[in-house]
Image (cartoon, rainbow, N blue to C red; front, side, top):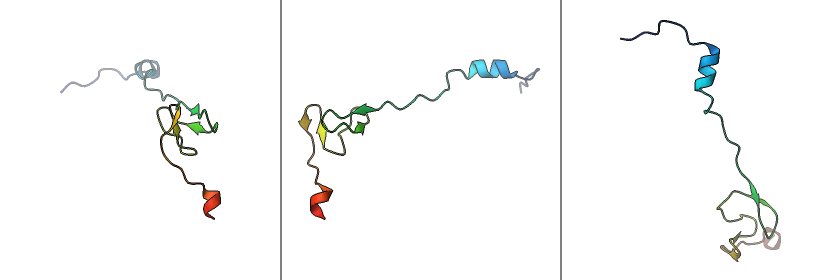
Length: 64
């Protein structure tokens, strides 16, 4: 079985892992209610998606 002859240095290890970073989550804002929404998702606050009402959302204020 192959065994490393030398210890891998921090620099070489870091260079190898340079592409393993975490990318930040992209957040957009709803065109109608200006709430933060993930891309390609229906707004959970108003149900708006791509210029139309995708789902019907009940108002919590009126139900109480």
